[in-house]
Image 1 (spheres, helix red, strand yellow):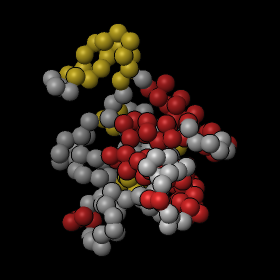
Image 2 (cartoon, one colour):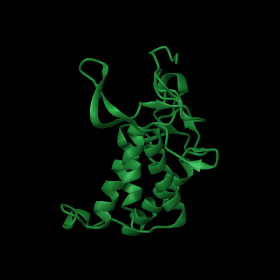
Image 3 (spheres, helix red, strand yellow):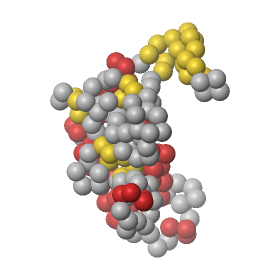
Length: 185
């Protein structure tokens, strides 16, 4: 995994919040994986001397470690792999809070990019297969049909053929929640 901020910030949790946590928020981990995949596959512009001094063995190891982190940090509920949190502990893989309105949770918004990577990962191990389809099944089972969120007006609007998911779901069950800036559900 990769943290929100690099290099490691030597600080207390009260003044640095979530900076050292491994983060799927803002697609940090997913974007890093895609970048490394492009470098490793020598996709343009990495098909030139720009990668002349790159150690591709280290890149391959980083990608393997990233997939291992994804599998280890996936939140399992009642024995079923589901989604990921916005932030995770780098060692225990537990979901962690971020800013005051980002409680430990499962979040469809950050997880969709992770699922896209898993769906396209070339090596289909049983662990990757289970992680992928556990998350896909979660999306299917928790889709709210016929509505979408109008951000401009802050309302949920009926719309035939649309699907919606809430931003935050409990870690332990499929109940969604909203949070204010004081961390109150």
